[in-house]
Image 1 (cartoon, rainbow, N blue to C red):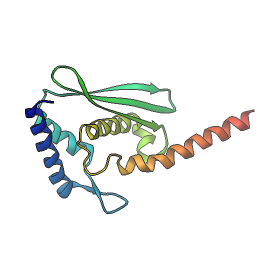
Image 2 (image 1 turned 60 degrees about the horizontal axis):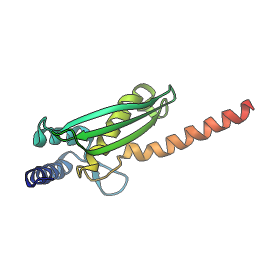
Image 3 (image 1 turned 135 degrees about the vertical axis):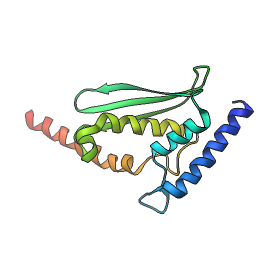
Length: 148
């Protein structure tokens, strides 16, 4: 990483820290979480369009969505990645917008991978998702056993 890029990353991190104070959402503990939309705005402000965020659907089988987000530098080298999985119909957001929710989570994790975490690597929604996904998987196993 060049000295110039390192300075941009540092400035962007400081900008996100300030956003966390003013726009941070309280998490379950005492920390705040800066939402992906605000981190993406800071990312664009500091990096412009020299860096790209690309997303790709890995799985969308009608039951679950798995995505990857990649941050590429101006040479096309991947400098950060993030993956996410959502179960369709689990929770209020995934009833209507599982794909969009999954993409946002993947982007947030890719931003966190380059140091732009916004206070927490995983959002509250992702942590809540652990319970939702565990319940959904248990229900699938239960239904599969009933069919046998």
